[in-house]
Length: 171
Length: 321
Image 1 (cartoon, helix red, strand yellow):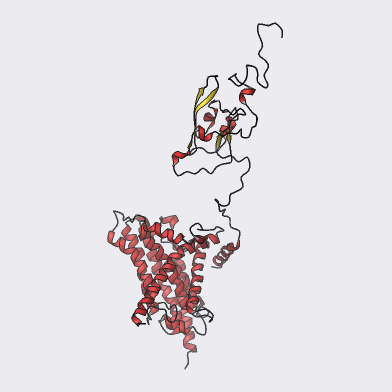
Image 2 (cartoon, chains in turn orange, cyan):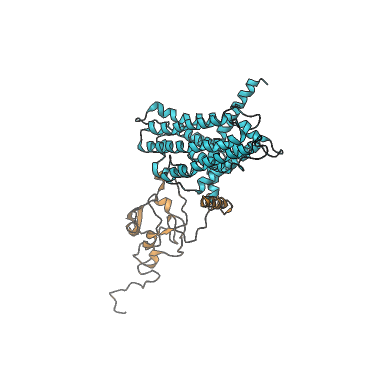
């Protein structure tokens, strides 16, 4: 009986404690700058898509929420014909970002993407593409490595030697 | 004013105010529980979330009023009415002030006991007509609990009746002019309070509805406004027990003169309503056999002893002895 009264008194005293509720839409929690929220597709400094449609992100995705189709332009440069992410499945794990060889997929701190209609959670390429370069400024995959696909001459990359003329004897 | 019209006005006023208070308790309870659990509670609808009651009402009115195919239809519909009716009837005998009272019954206390006994039918019939295992279990628990706690609820009240020498609630309040009865009748007050919790089957004695064991107990099958009536009936029960505690043990509308009597009554009543809610916030539910043995082995002897000692004292100090 006394212990009951004591517990009632202790519960009563909780009245004067600090509230733990965060009034969410008015008061937002602090998000660390590296918080991983939803996915964006970035562009390289030339303002063309970084994505080379290698399918590594789709392979890495543990919930299979990424779907894309590769195609090539007239210079032989690969790009995704469509790039679709079903955010009702996405768990914001960031494995696609790790898998991406061209820094194209990046995770941004935005996570407030609730919708009334579930179909609206399926994002197409035009929803995902942003105009900027994201976290990696000045990086252009085709300038560093890879085939000549209209971005550079053959052997004209930043870390590349000029192509060797195998018909010549001079080293 | 014509006394008949005045009487009808009082009746309607008491009815409206009590039902409004009971409905408002839905908000008060959620808010106070939140306050005691370090939360904020409903605060989105209107100022301080006060319109939550209205929103809940609209929601529950527009819900599908479904009667299960396997239920006993007439009894199923009747059961939620009984609880509302018996409790609202009891409010008739409560003296809110010397003037505001529906009926000045000379057997007020007995009337309350009779009505609260009838209230047990609501639980039993609801559980029975639902034709559902959990409902029936809840009803059996509820009837056993209410019957056994009613016994010493009545006996604990007898101490007050013996001291005041009347069953009339008005006269009981008048008899508390020198001392409020919770001081001489402290044991009776505690027993009545505990029995009152059991009678309204509130936490910690919510064994008939015990969510963790019986889904929702006797009202598992109810939906829409029928469920709402059980819900409001429960809050009306809290209000009624609080009002009775105030009337019987805390001097009713008596208080210092700077506030009118009805305000004193409501203040005291709300203190007890808040204690009811605080108990919900803090105490766990006892096991069923614990509840029973607690009632029969501790509270019943205690209330009998209280009655015996009160009677002896009253006889000993009575004038002419």
